[in-house]
Length: 335
Ligand code: AMP
Ligand code: MG
Image 1: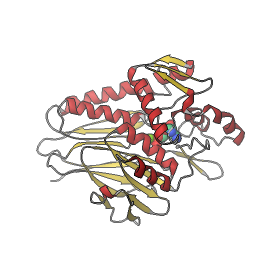
Image 2 (image 1 turned 120 degrees about the vertical axis):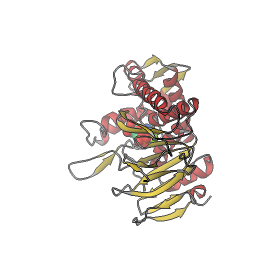
Image 3 (image 1 turned 60 degrees about the vertical axis):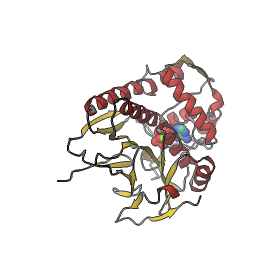
Image 4 (image 1 turned 180 degrees about the vertical axis):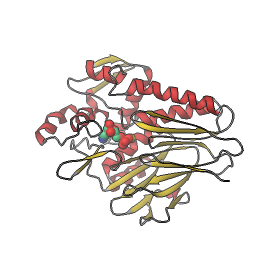
């Protein structure tokens, strides 16, 4: 009998069908404030998953903003720190992504993330005065990185929440490659990496969640790629007046991005970059996101717009199928 696992995650669902004759190895863990599911097939799969889980936990120990002894917490608290090479590497990549996206992705939004506390215990809507007081602290010019030595201007802080899971998925991919895993699929809270094909040679099936419902909007047939979704529906809180505030902040306004997009899925060869870009392109909105894709290249896109369209880049048109029961309309983004 054909087996299906539908792994319901915050944004991307992996539809996994069997590992051929051998049972797939599966591992789930809670790390980086999200549920993670890892599957690998073939010889050495169990060891690969265990190493991957250890690696993810070690990265959380470096990048967490809630663990007091993490690299990021030390830097934010002390204003300067000598960092683990991986923390420095991820901060350096974050700076490149900030530059590439014109500041739509910006890890120095941390003071605003703390103020809103959307994913924390006490979310609230700050006053304009409170936001204005913190806006001068936001901007990558406040982060100074020299090798593994980092410093921040007074009052500034960094938050790697928009890129850390993507980085972790890159590391899982490296572990799979080093251990000879040729078939596997992982979802780190919606940051998906699919390794090779399914053992029967067919592509993995990755479902993009319907941001407005419980099901999925479309399914992608993928192999050897990263797929990362950002969306307003993933983490948010409802204020007493009924307004919903989500967790992706526009560094230009200090408030949750007023996007005409419901979700952005970025596919490419780097989990870290796909993660940073999915956050940034959500902030940008449809037109700017599509212009960015035309100008930048090197990745693919699935945008779900607030007015009910699923817009994909031309390279995905053969790989994307709308869900049967969905009212979304499929459109291909012009090159
Ligand atoms: P993601 O789910 O990857 O889109 O990342 C969202 C998380 O990244 C938030 O929960 C914040 O911790 C952080 N964040 C919010 N807005 C931004 C932004 N514009 N640039 C970088 N990180 C952000
Ligand atoms: Mg992101």
